[in-house]
Length: 111
Image 1: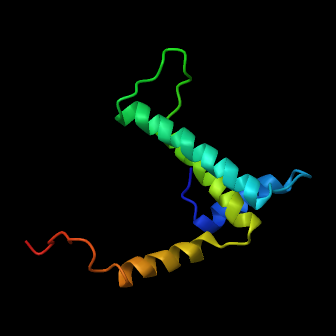
Image 2: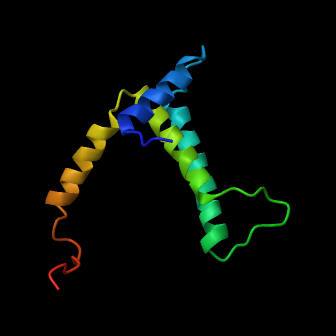
């Protein structure tokens, strides 16, 4: 599978959702779904890295699968609000590279 840009991911999700009459859920419903998916991701992380092992009756899912679900719903929310996620990412990275540039201890790469 070839690498995809965020723009391509957004277009792929839009094409998928566009085949259904219902279209995107409302922003509030998508936020609820995002919260639900985040909870499922948290549960998997807790099972794999935390102190709460899975019950024998629980379905095996992976952190990667749950992360993918979360990303899909985030893209749905962004698309429904006409947010370009590449632009949003560039904006936040600019913030981190300016406002927060001296906030953390950098690794000395000149050794």
